[in-house]
Length: 335
Image (cartoon, rainbow, N blue to C red; front, side, top):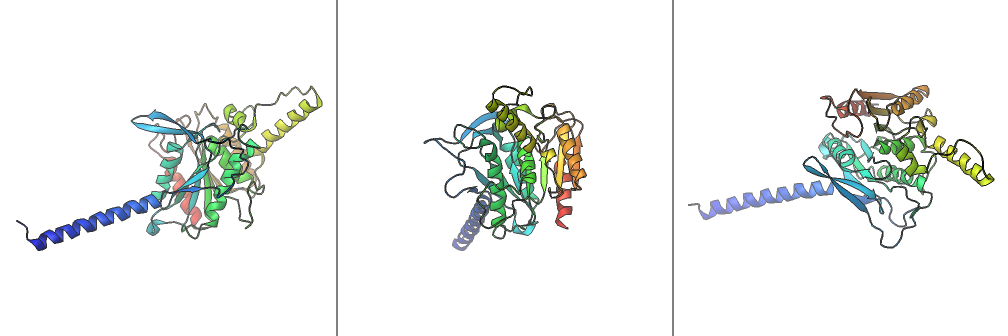
């Protein structure tokens, strides 16, 4: 039978263990908190009263997946690494979903946790999906939210242990289109920017991205959801119809990232599966060509097989794109 002193000692050890466990849990919760993008009025929003976020649930093997189909209040979910492991690098993550939804699990949180484990701060962006029913200028809304995310992370870099010149953006599929748009349109601010904060990401990571809105390359659903249907190439009709046709062509040009690359476009890591039938690998190839033409550093990683939407883990390969990407990022950190 234990003495009173032994019992007290055991209780103190147990209490200390529970306290440390609680502190660790609180640290993890604080490292994964949600941050609203906008403190007040949400720009370009004409929200109807009672409109709420909407999420579809689906089975992913043994797990339940989440596909966000409406975002009313855009936000960032923050994954900060332990201070002792921090590299000072940060990445804003844009999940894909054809601009009709957000695959927040395998193209968002799973990636964020992997970056966090490797000392890189990650911020999963739930951006608004274009919908003219409750938005003005719906085609600029995802870009607006992504620019705001870069601005928010950069303006809070010191507080979050991040180097302000090591903040990049990652996107998969249509999220890759958004990320490449952020990397090629940073001089065209869609957000209030009184501090003149740079909206240019310091690097881009693009996974099986939609790059072009040209008929021969694009993912038709992503293009239609963002900027509308393809214009009728047979010009004709009323003056207004002809004007609309020209405007539609201008939008296709503006949102085809391979056509707007400049020498100031950020260094890029890009990955794709050659057998992707949803977003043809030619999207990646034309973007690489445009980057090289403008002397922008680019590193590519191709799978022979894997199709589209594999996220972190391509089941057809034992080699992970993430390992190559991480090596590339850490080399960039030294410069």
